Length: 567
Ligand code: C2E
Ligand code: MG
Ligand code: MG
Image 1 (cartoon, rainbow, N blue to C red):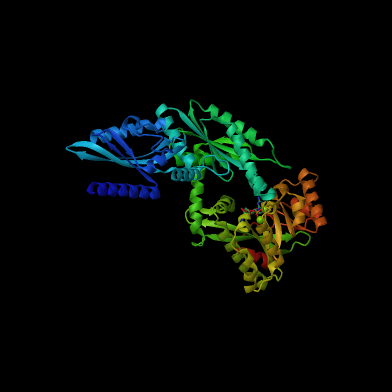
Image 2 (cartoon, rainbow, N blue to C red):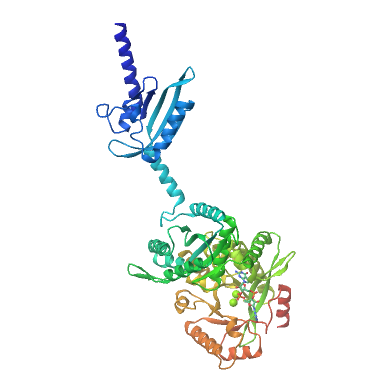
């Protein structure tokens, strides 16, 4: 009676144990080294896709189900447990009785008696789902979902590995930084779906130009990199760059659309140019930038002078942040003269930066940097407010219809905040109508098809602020843009005025621009008038306004007021 009771207790416990294991999905097992037996619980059988009827575990076949590459791991774990009494815990793969490949976690702990291991007891758990989730997370964290290429993180890891390998074998690594031109236009004009397809196709073409051992990665947007490892010389990198440029220049056919891309490539070498991953990336980026500045579809090697230029840019960018607060900017004003009468009712405001140690810095040396780091938004706002105050003063003192142009950057039209929308309110607080101010834009603004830009331009016009198209003739100069927006003035770029002579090619161009503008009802301002001859030729051609050193250089407001007094 006693013994049956004990037996049934044991059976009940065994059932309970199995039930708990079934719920937690943890299988148990035990090796009895004294009796040379191996025991599995129900869940362990289930994990192995088998049953006690079909399979009898024993020490001799303990390794049956492990995937071959994991056999050494588990063998070593068992021999360490038996000989040294070490517990173990491993994640490895099994091939079940139904040939399913699964991940399990196997845990084993030893029982000792008189200094010898007599039992190893352990647990088994199917962790396939968790492993899959982990692998998916890893993939998402390291690969670009669109192109399935390595992402920035993976790229960095690969570059590190390649440079270590190159260090050991005394070879070189080339890093190519590829930036696609015109991609933004494609995205803007035909939509993001087509843009995605273009990126995928571009990635495919790039991949076709590199070896399996090279790493092609997408850093984001339209930026790709190629790591070319184990180089003996520099020539292979150039070959790849040429190949890439050629492949990308072929037209992209997407449905009914045909798109064209360009590319700029920067190349740098490990260890010649730098040894650290960040420095290499920066070099390649700088070289790419230099390639872009030379025109599209080019590649450019990194040189140390690029670094100097970049350092100087960095210093300017840093100093720019404090310049507004430190009150280092000033505006100068250049008169815009009505050519037929010689009167001055207009001016252009131009910014100057008086740096505490470097002295005067001209806008060409800092505006593009301010555009890159976004500072131009605050600067542009300051320029507008200063100008508005100035025009209020001059209207009150000298000339009731005075008007000043401010240069605006394309970045200001992208800015998502609504500062430009408040320009009119600001003018009103000064008692000024909208047409006291003209916003000068460049053709880049008109080319952009983002609706926020069009909306902002329209909003300016709606409150009477006039629009002037600056540097006309140097950019895309498309008539369709002129018709799409209500533009009030076009400014002929000074490069056309510079060599102006009777019956020259530039004269023909100026004539054409003036005739076209008159037809479209626009006024024309000629920039850079330096001589009497320039003025006479342009006046005779019917140009409305002129601006240039012949009349006055851009001057501080006090000096400008003397022009009123004198004229
Ligand atoms: P821009 O708007 O085309 O301005 C005309 C430039 O030509 C000015 O250069 C002016 O000083 C110069 N200039 C005027 N008359 C003559 C002349 O007879 N001969 C010659 N050789 N040059 C003449 P500046 O002031 O150095 O400005 C350069 C550019 O910087 C401007 O070109 C404009 O694009 C930009 N800029 C200036 N101020 C601002 C600003 O407040 N905001 C923004 N976003 N850009 C600005
Ligand atoms: Mg201008
Ligand atoms: Mg201009």
